[in-house]
Amino acid sequence: MNSRKKATSKGVRIMFWAGVSILTLWILLLGGNSFFNTWKLQRQVEKLEKETSYLKAVNDSLAQENERLKTDPEAAEKAAREKFGLTKQDETVFRFVPAKEEPTKK
Image 1 (cartoon, rainbow, N blue to C red):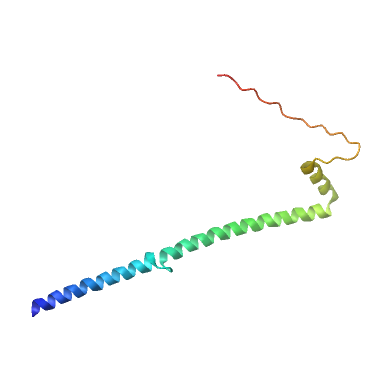
Image 2 (image 1 turned 120 degrees about the horizontal axis):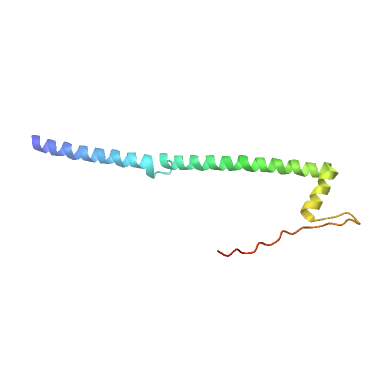
Protein backbone atom coordinates (compact mmCIF):
# COMPACT_ATOMS: atom_id res chain seq x y z
CA MET A 1 0.00 0.00 0.00
CA ASN A 2 2.85 2.34 0.76
CA SER A 3 4.48 1.86 -2.69
CA ARG A 4 1.17 2.58 -4.44
CA LYS A 5 0.83 5.81 -2.46
CA LYS A 6 4.37 6.86 -3.49
CA ALA A 7 3.69 6.11 -7.17
CA THR A 8 0.44 8.04 -7.09
CA SER A 9 1.93 10.99 -5.29
CA LYS A 10 4.91 11.03 -7.72
CA GLY A 11 2.56 11.02 -10.73
CA VAL A 12 0.43 13.74 -9.19
CA ARG A 13 3.51 15.83 -8.52
CA ILE A 14 4.70 15.42 -12.12
CA MET A 15 1.26 16.38 -13.46
CA PHE A 16 1.12 19.35 -11.07
CA TRP A 17 4.53 20.72 -12.13
CA ALA A 18 3.77 20.08 -15.80
CA GLY A 19 0.56 22.09 -15.42
CA VAL A 20 2.36 24.88 -13.59
CA SER A 21 5.06 24.93 -16.29
CA ILE A 22 2.51 25.08 -19.11
CA LEU A 23 0.57 27.81 -17.34
CA THR A 24 3.76 29.82 -16.74
CA LEU A 25 4.81 29.40 -20.37
CA TRP A 26 1.36 30.54 -21.50
CA ILE A 27 1.43 33.62 -19.28
CA LEU A 28 4.97 34.64 -20.26
CA LEU A 29 5.12 33.85 -23.98
CA LEU A 30 2.07 32.42 -25.71
CA GLY A 31 -1.10 34.19 -24.64
CA GLY A 32 -2.60 37.20 -26.35
CA ASN A 33 -1.93 39.30 -23.25
CA SER A 34 1.39 37.65 -22.43
CA PHE A 35 4.28 39.63 -21.01
CA PHE A 36 6.21 39.20 -24.27
CA ASN A 37 3.31 40.44 -26.39
CA THR A 38 2.70 43.35 -24.01
CA TRP A 39 6.41 44.27 -24.18
CA LYS A 40 6.34 44.23 -28.00
CA LEU A 41 3.23 46.40 -28.09
CA GLN A 42 4.78 48.85 -25.62
CA ARG A 43 7.86 49.21 -27.86
CA GLN A 44 5.61 49.81 -30.86
CA VAL A 45 3.64 52.47 -28.95
CA GLU A 46 6.87 54.26 -27.99
CA LYS A 47 8.04 54.20 -31.62
CA LEU A 48 4.73 55.59 -32.83
CA GLU A 49 4.78 58.31 -30.16
CA LYS A 50 8.24 59.42 -31.34
CA GLU A 51 7.04 59.46 -34.93
CA THR A 52 3.95 61.44 -33.91
CA SER A 53 6.00 64.07 -32.10
CA TYR A 54 8.33 64.38 -35.12
CA LEU A 55 5.38 64.79 -37.49
CA LYS A 56 3.79 67.37 -35.19
CA ALA A 57 7.03 69.38 -35.27
CA VAL A 58 7.13 69.19 -39.07
CA ASN A 59 3.47 70.19 -39.25
CA ASP A 60 4.08 73.17 -36.96
CA SER A 61 7.03 74.37 -39.04
CA LEU A 62 4.99 74.05 -42.23
CA ALA A 63 2.12 75.97 -40.62
CA GLN A 64 4.55 78.76 -39.66
CA GLU A 65 5.97 78.82 -43.18
CA ASN A 66 2.46 78.95 -44.63
CA GLU A 67 1.50 81.85 -42.36
CA ARG A 68 4.72 83.68 -43.21
CA LEU A 69 4.06 83.28 -46.93
CA LYS A 70 0.52 84.61 -46.51
CA THR A 71 1.50 87.69 -44.51
CA ASP A 72 4.99 88.67 -45.72
CA PRO A 73 5.15 89.74 -49.38
CA GLU A 74 8.95 89.55 -49.44
CA ALA A 75 8.86 85.92 -48.29
CA ALA A 76 6.26 85.11 -50.94
CA GLU A 77 8.40 86.75 -53.62
CA LYS A 78 11.50 84.91 -52.46
CA ALA A 79 9.66 81.57 -52.51
CA ALA A 80 8.27 82.28 -55.99
CA ARG A 81 11.74 83.11 -57.29
CA GLU A 82 13.53 80.17 -55.70
CA LYS A 83 10.99 77.39 -56.09
CA PHE A 84 9.28 78.32 -59.34
CA GLY A 85 11.92 80.40 -61.14
CA LEU A 86 9.61 83.39 -61.58
CA THR A 87 11.03 86.77 -62.51
CA LYS A 88 9.83 90.34 -62.62
CA GLN A 89 9.01 92.00 -65.90
CA ASP A 90 12.11 93.24 -67.79
CA GLU A 91 14.39 91.35 -65.44
CA THR A 92 17.32 89.30 -66.72
CA VAL A 93 18.27 86.15 -64.87
CA PHE A 94 21.63 84.46 -65.21
CA ARG A 95 21.87 80.81 -64.28
CA PHE A 96 25.25 79.27 -63.82
CA VAL A 97 25.50 75.57 -64.46
CA PRO A 98 28.42 73.81 -62.80
CA ALA A 99 30.94 72.32 -65.22
CA LYS A 100 30.88 68.58 -65.60
CA GLU A 101 33.84 66.82 -64.15
CA GLU A 102 35.86 64.76 -66.54
CA PRO A 103 36.66 61.24 -65.41
CA THR A 104 40.21 60.94 -64.20
CA LYS A 105 42.36 58.11 -65.47
CA LYS A 106 44.39 56.16 -62.97
